[in-house]
Each structure stands twice: as structure tokens, then as C-alpha cells.
Amino acid sequence: MNRMLRIELRRSAALGAALILLLTGAIVCYATPGRWSSSWMALVMIEREYLVLLFPLALAAGAWQGRRESRAGLAELIESTPRPRPQRVLPLLGALGITVAGGYLAVLAVTAPWIAGTARYLPAAAFAVVAVGVLAVVAAAWLGLAVGRLWPSVAAGPVLAVAGIGWLMGFPGIVSGQEWLAALFSPMYGMSQYSDYETVPGRLTTAQAVWLGALAVGAYVLHSAKSRRTRVAALLPVALGVAVAIAVMPHDRYLPRAIDPVAQELVCTTDAPKVCVARVHSSLLPDVTPRARQALALLAKLPQPPAEAHEDTTTWDREIPEPRPDPAGIALMTIQVDDRSHLASPNDLVPQIVARVFSNQSRCPDGLSSSVVRAATYWLVGTEPPAEPGFDDGGEWNNQVRQLWQSLRELPEAEALARVTAVREGALNCADLDEIVRGK
Image (cartoon, rainbow, N blue to C red):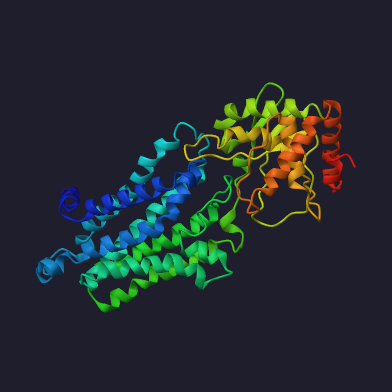
């Protein structure tokens, strides 16, 4: 068996299939490093999302290999051998399965060095996410192999590839409103992280593994079948797997947006003033700490200033909760990771933390004057506010910010500080900040 397996590895299209998966996966991952540079979970989930390409390619590779006997004119000769077909096809299935699985894993091998020095949190769920991805490409390759044998046409590969893309992308639209079904039967669905704390629930992973494993078994039965009855029987393991998967799957409409509480846990400095970031961002703590402490020192000019700085780990994906103010004595900050897996826009962190104390988290019905908040922020920071892009008012808003900031600078420091303090209190009470900053 081992000898036959080695022969299939050398002579079949298995190695070529692995190379195609590796090149495709590596290219699309490195084309968008910002989507997975934040953590290991982000990396394994984004590769699962790229099954939209890898799954159809595995189908097409299997279909191409499935044409081999018919293409070489050896189908009748091979069928006449005394060895049962279910045993005879095992080396080819093994070779194709090993190589496409290796191609999928190789994508991780070439992308992992990008974040290996910075990503420290590696949850067990990440391995399960990878295992389902491997199972998906193996099942696809085996299904393509079976279809290629039954339909030995040069069009089989392209048709299956298009059908695979249509299934992965079209099925969620067919079951619109039933996210649990979309997540179950489209292994790429819901794999794009909207928060660095997202994960894939264990029950979802188990259900996906069950039906994909059943699909692989059904493909094996179909490929080894010699009669129409046996081919129809290939549907039985698939139907059983789907039934079990649906029973295991939780019917939660928020399932694809599950949050990992361990990734949200705060990791803090041992000395004061305390600075804390989420565990998934723990490698950024040395970069965040000096900037957060600088912001705390600036905020110390205000009455009842915050004594600690924490990453804001609030997530808003499930529902909009009741508005609540920031914790007393704690300055909150948002941590973002850049394409190189480092702290994104480090120079903006101090103004961001300072600005947060002027933002009313109770969400004033009429909103707050963003120009006043920005002017007060940069007065405390001690630098001129840079132009904020994205405003289509011809620069009027940025000019207003600079004028307000300049008017604060021209005041005696004690009076300017009093107005900035009043702005903070006014924001908490949803007052008119424009009148406050002008001393009215």
C-alpha cells in the first residue's frame, strides 16, 4: 500500500493540486495582511474565508485527476483486475487527500512568520478551525475525483469550480435570515473578523466537521461504486452526516459572531499607573504603556482624573446595549493593529485617550460638538490639531477646530483649563459645548 501511495504521489496530479492551493492561498493572504495580522485566530479564520477559492480549486483538481483512467483509455483494463475497486482507489484518494491537506497547511506555514513575533495568544479553537478547513479541501478533492470519473469531460473541472463558488457564496443568500444554516453548510461564511475578540464556537466546528466528513465518505463510496445502486447509496452517509450536524448545531442567529472571553481578558502592567490591554493584544503592551501614561499625565490637570488606562473591549455585534458611561477612574482606549502586526497609528493614541473623556458614552440625543471636543483635546495634548480627512465641507470644519483651539491658547492657562473642564462636564450632561468653550 505504501509503495502504491508513493507511486500515486509521483504520477498523479496530487502534487500539482497542492502547489496550486499553496500559491493561491499565499497570494490572497499576503494581498490583504491587515485582515489577519492581529492574531492567530484572525489568520486561521481568514484562510477559512478564502475557501471561496481553495474549495473550488480542490474540486477542479479532483475532477481533472478523475479523468485519468478514461483519458488514458485504461478504464476497462483496470476494472478487470481482481482487486476490489474500494481497495484499488485508496492509494489515489490517500495521495490526493494528503497533498491538498498539505497545500492548505502550507499556506499557514508561509504566513505564520508574518505574525509569529507579535501574536502571543493561540487558543485551542484555532486548531479546530484549521482542521475543518483541511477537511473541507479533502472532501472537495474527493468529490471532484468521483465526479471526474463519472463525467470524464474536460469541462468537468471548470463546471465544478464554478458550482463550488456558487455554493459557498450563494447558499447564505438562499437561507437569508437563517445564519446558523449558512454557517453550517458554507465553511467560509462568517470567517471575516469584525472584532479581534471573535472566535468560532466549538459546536459550530463540530457540526461542520461532521457533515464535511460525511461528504468525504460519500465521495469515497461514489468513486469506488461500480453500479448505479451503489452510487445512490453514496447519498446515505451524506444525509446521515447532515442530519447529525443539524442536530448538533445551535440555532443562534448570532453564532458567526461569537466572542472569546479569554481574548478579551485584560493583561496589565505590574507598576502604576496601571495600563491594560486585551490578551489578544498583549504583545502591544510595551508600545501602548508609555503613550497611555502620557495621556494620563495630561488628564491629571482635570478634576477627578482617571488613574488607569484600559483597552475598551466592548463589542457591538450582537445588539446595541443600553448606553452606559465609561468606568469611573479609568480612561478607555481602542487598540488597532496595522498590517505589520504592530500598533496602528501610535501617534494618535494619546489624543484618542484624551478625547475619550470628552465623549459622552450616554449618547446625547442631539449629539455633541465634535469641533469643540477636538479643540479641547488638542489643547490638553499641547499640539495643534491636524487636519481631519473625510470632511467634504471645503475644510470649514477643520478651520473651526483650529480657531477654537487658538482661542483657548490665547487665554491664560487657568482660564483655558477652566473652560476645558467645563467642556468635560458639559459633555456628561449633554450641554451646548459651543457656548461653554466660548465662555458664555
